[in-house]
Length: 42
Image (cartoon, rainbow, N blue to C red; front, side, top):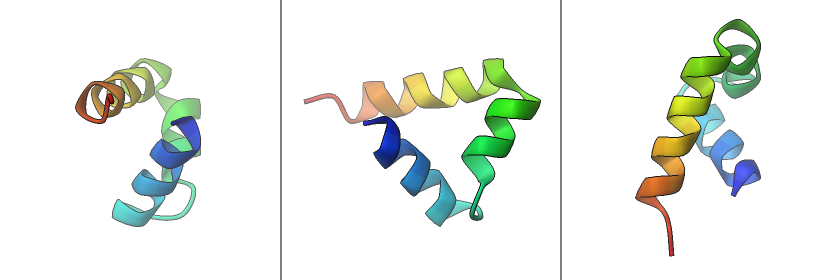
């Protein structure tokens, strides 16, 4: 799921967005990733 999250955010925003967010704001990255996981749980 992590790879899908990275791919989706890169498509929505820009290439490298998720990596930049993880580096600059790890808490926000974790929040966004958790929201993604909650929305797309099977």
